[in-house]
Structures are given as C-alpha cells and as structure tokens.
Image 1 (cartoon, rainbow, N blue to C red):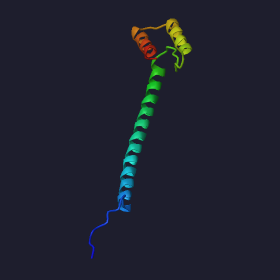
Image 2: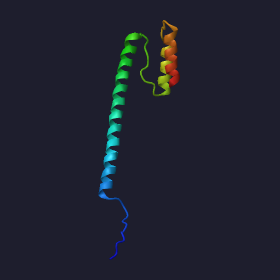
Image 3: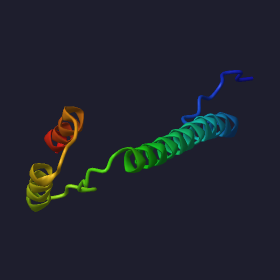
Image 4: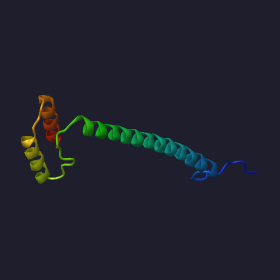
Length: 98
C-alpha cells in the first residue's frame, strides 16, 4: 500500500469561495464609504453655493477652463466695486488657484 499523498497544484473550491467573499466584503465597504464621501461633498457644495450667493453681491466667473476665462475673470475683478478688502483677497486667491 502506498500512503503517500499526491500534491495537486492550484486552489480548492472552498479557498476560492473564501477569497471571493473577502473581496466582495472589502468592495462593499469601499462602496459605502465612497457614497458617504460623495453625499457629504454634495451637501458641502450646496451649502457653500447658497452661502456665497446670498452673502456676496460681487459678480464672479463660475468656472475658469481656459486663458480667456482667466482674462475675463481678471477684468471682472478689476471692474468690480469691492466694498471690503476681504472680498478682493478672496477673489484674488480664487484666481491664483487657477
């Protein structure tokens, strides 16, 4: 009688199922965290847009995608009648970010 075990290469079905379950759990946790982050970001964005639209009478360029938009924003900053130095600093920091 030969009692020697024959070693097979590869994984058993149970091992593969365990790996798939672990990956699914990690994916589900990541998905929930991502959705939570997106919802929080959307709420913050809505709040910021409503605060900025009600708190300021300064006309701003909503999106700067090109050099032309940057020039328009700079012209709007030059033409704006800014009541306080804080508003000017805020607009200049937004322009500097682009």
